[in-house]
Image (cartoon, rainbow, N blue to C red; front, side):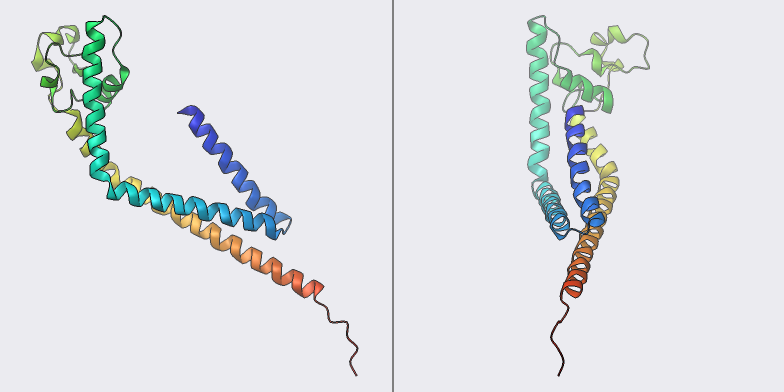
Length: 193
């Protein structure tokens, strides 16, 4: 995840350099490249947001399936005496939930990640289901998304508005540079009679 963020930051830096250098050197080529890259990014974001909205049920089904796989992997690795996969553990700790639909999803033993951390007898939670999180992670995940939806929407609209501003600004600069160069080099040398 860290490397992905560093890569995105590097790409953003290169794109910003196209815009800054194009404006500083009054280069139509650099500004045109900057404009084209921004158009592609904007189109990709709109497409991604649209597909995310259209396929939201499939995405939730994928998350549900992945959670179930995490429970199966947990049981399988526990039987082999290996350390469990941290996927479900991290979700259960973060959302304060247990299993996909509830702690009953773990048939044989409830993992420590499902334990309510306010209870001092956490290690005995495997024997006492009343000391574990009762809510399933699927419902908690949906509720978290619903709570954060306004923030996600506002951030997306803000980024899109800034991108549109940058697109318009680069287009205006490109046209201004073209007009300036055509006026500068377009001197009429004909002799008036």
